Structure formats: structure tokens, C-alpha cells
Length: 310
Ligand code: KIV
Image 1 (cartoon, rainbow, N blue to C red):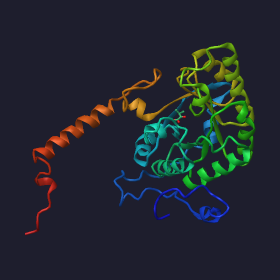
Image 2 (cartoon, rainbow, N blue to C red):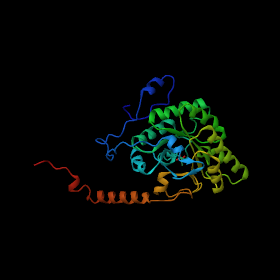
Image 3 (cartoon, rainbow, N blue to C red):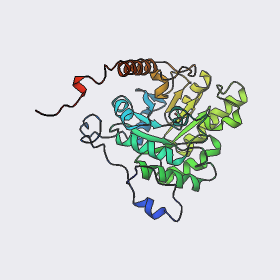
Image 4 (spheres, rainbow, N blue to C red):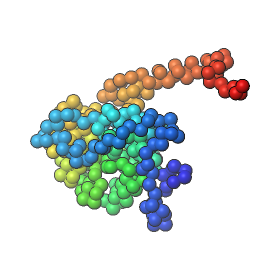
């Protein structure tokens, strides 16, 4: 596709055109700033991730991070098992107030970039709010579009029991699903905020039964977000599939964070985030140095300036 932008979500009128398109080519390292393309590796598959949990135990915890761009994917890929194009890109990349306004086209474009930049990790793409809740059929159309356009291998969607039928419908039709229970940010308008969930017995029971319902429906793994630790542990024990925690417990079968949060890109992050870097300070100090060099005419120097050949 010439523009590199995701086509509009398929309608009967444009479906045939969308069906022919693919963006799943690899980075051309002769024309991009990317590192040399590593020797092709076998990508991790959904069954291999699912099989990491055997008899309730995961010997090697699953490492998952969000990724939104090709270069970010290249840097994260060798260290991760799963790269998630989270709809958190609404806030992180687009400066939106929540993930509610995120569209299928945004998800498709970023997912295609992450697939191009990765060779090893399983790539999972979030289904944005409004693209799957109405019916299993609507969810299938949206998920099929995301996978066809981007080359990602699986989708993630939020919700428990209410989504179990949809999870079964997708899985039985070739679309692997990563579930998401506990604090589900797309439900912010119902929940009234992003507070940790499961502080009442009723809420705790609901989160565990939500996870069980997704597990039984065929989810290959489940993210549990923002819950008090005993609930995360109960979910890990209740689900036969791997449970990946965020603001949950070290006893989960794996962990996920928003990459920019753990890199130190933002001043304000949830309490459960561990900052592994101070990237915002690095960017700010580097930009300040550039600005000073431009203003004092130190940049460009001789090395960065073309001279006529003599
Ligand atoms: O959107 C996202 O980034 C997520 C992860 C935090 C799990 O859902």
C-alpha cells in the first residue's frame, strides 16, 4: 500500500481491496535507519507460550512488554517472549485521555510496524474499545482485519464471563485470544477510575470466575491487571493457561509492563511500575545540548557539513 496507512475498516464495498493487501514485509535495512536484519529466527508461537504452564507451574516466567513502533520492537524483541501492541498507545503515543478513542486503524498500523521490527517474540494486538463487544461476529471481523493487515498472531480483549462466548468463537475460528481481567481500562467509565480491583469479596470472586470463564473458553493466556495480590494468586491457581500479571503478583506465570513506564518516560506512573531507566531525562538533556549547539553555531560542525570535491 503506497501511503503505509491502514485502510479503513472493511465494509462490503472495500472488503475485496483490503483482502488483497499485506503489509507484512520485513524492514529494508538498505533504506531504513534500522540495524541490520538479524538472521531469521523462529518466532514463538501461541502453543509454545500456552505450554509454558504445565500442571499449574511455569518454570520460566513469560516476559511481555508493550511495543508500538518498529524500532522499539527491534530493541525489545531479543529480550521478550510476547510484544503487545497495547491500546495504551492512546495515552502513550497519541496523548489521548484514555484508550476509549483508539481505533482499529491505529492498532493495525502500529501492529504492522511491530511485526516488521521483530523476529522472535509472539506479537499480540489489543482489540480497541467498540471493535468487539457487540457480538462474536463483530469481534471476528475486527480481529481478522487486525491479523490480516498487521501479521500479528493473536489478539487481546478485555472482559471476563461476558466475553467468554466471544473468546470461544474466535479461538474455534483460528484467532488466538489473550484475555484481560481485573482492572480493565476500557471500562474506565463504568469503574470510575483506574483503582486496584478486588477489594470486596464479591469483586474478588468475580475476578477469579471471570478468569476461569476465559480459560475454559480457550484463551491461551490471561492478563490480570491492578488487583490485590491474593486475587492474582487465586487467578494463577484457577487458570490452567498462563496468567500474566501487571500490578498483580510475582507468583503470576509472567509479567507485563508498558515499556515507556519502565523506561522512565513519564513523571507519573502507577505504583506497580518499577522504573528501570530515566529516558525522559536523557531525551531532555540531549535536546537541550542540541539547542545550545544550534544557538551558538557549534552545530553543524565540519564533520557534518558537505564541501565541494576539489
Ligand atoms: O494496553 C496495554 O498496554 C495493556 C497492558 C498494560 C497489559 O493492556
